Image (cartoon, rainbow, N blue to C red; front, side, top):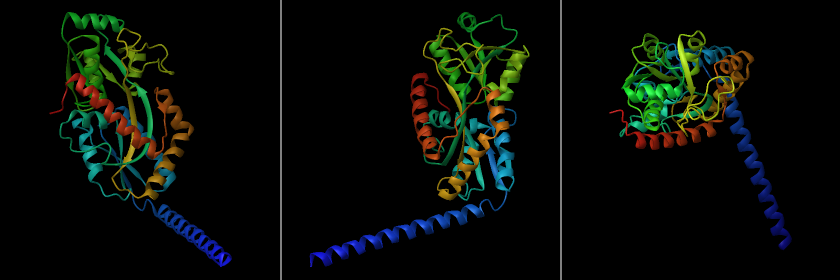
Amino acid sequence: MPGIALRYTHHQQLRSIVTSLALALSQSLALAAGDAAYPSRPVRFLVPAPPGGTVDMTARLLGPRFTEQMGKPFVVDNRGGAGGVIAAEMIAAAKPDGHTISMVYTSYTTNAAMRTQSSYSPVTDNTAITQVSWSPLVLAAHNGLPVKTLPELIQLAKSKTILYGSAGNGSGGHMSGALFTIMAGISATHVPYKGAALATSEVLSGQVAFQFAGPITVLSLGRANKLKLLAVTSLKRASHLPEIPTVDESGVTGFEVINWFGIVAPPLTPKFITHRLHREAQTALARTEVRTRLINEAAEITASTPAEFQIFLKQDLQKWARIVQLTGIRAE
């Protein structure tokens, strides 16, 4: 009888293995079928900012590659204003069929951290696809300011209150400026604009003294001697901007902020769509012309997995929540 029992157990194990393999095969076939059918129409590619800034450029760099690779148009839809909240609410409420996706960037977590009752969660109101890249912010000052270095700007701000601009309340530039004023011990008043490009135009005209902005927004202006690029916000000098010192080495010890960019889909988006979008994003980010453009703009390419990006979003929200406690700034 023991032999019969052993044979019976062996047959059970075989049936279990065969059943598992069959289930895995059927799931793979279903994913393949869904993958082949997606996308079935043009994809709306939300951008939580007006044209002209870093997040817009990144979307317009990737959109045509997605269109070419996936056979359907990826149409950029700029939804600026409110520091990115409008687009965040739209992606949270969109149908999870992969035909609406969104760029997200630093303000996606900073805005949520600033609001006691945020209208969206960067952790639960999306399906993470990938973190595309990150870069330091650049402290860009009006060309007419009587300063040449960051320590000189700090001394100027200690003698009188100056203005700084940003892409909007809750943007990375706003939070960087708030943290900078506290850590540098200066008085500077925040002026929010509807997008980084508008803030930059006000720095150019001298309406505000400086801003923290993405390299794409201000780098060419600095190289043309139209803005003074005084510092970068990473702890180490940016590999492609070695001539610009860090805020940390300029006397504000421990100061560090990075500007990041990623792609999300609506909550509950099926895995076959998530996997397809991630795979196509990796392909696009590996293309020479895409890498060259991003690297030339001082970006570090990430191309993380959906799981890695989801963890990053949670950790970034926690980091900014601590900074909000330190600075006391709120969106309301």
